[in-house]
Amino acid sequence: MEIRAIRTEADYLTALQEVSVLIDLDPIPDTPEGERLDVLGTLIQAYEAKHYPIDPPDPIDAIKFRMDQSGLTVKDLVPYIGPLNRVYEVLAHKRSLSLNMIRRLSEGLNIPAEILIRESETVQAQ
Image 1: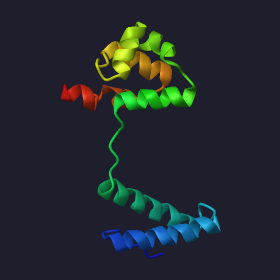
Image 2: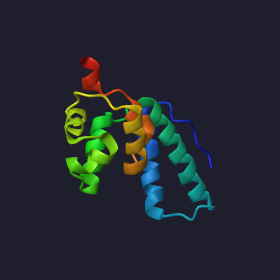
Image 3: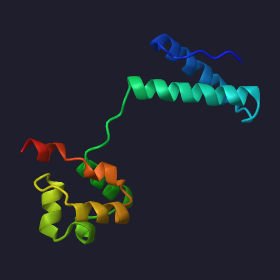
């Protein structure tokens, strides 16, 4: 089982093709094919993290996404953010999240605190 590092885009595309073939085979994990799939997956993940990083979402976009996922309304955010007018200010990027809001949103809506801690890009610009 010879596996090489993924250093170029060509190496990356070749690895993706090989992983596609291995996935179609659906190998058992402890077989040589299963181990090859696991190792190639790890190498691809490392290459993608380095060459195609994904920035974390804007905190307000994360809240809106969770609202959409959970079928929540603006009124449903009152326990986490405060009075309705404050909820609207936060969602309109006119007010930053406080530490208490971040804690309540993280615990109540299961949004990672590290996402909520980031300063909203629109609030930063003001």
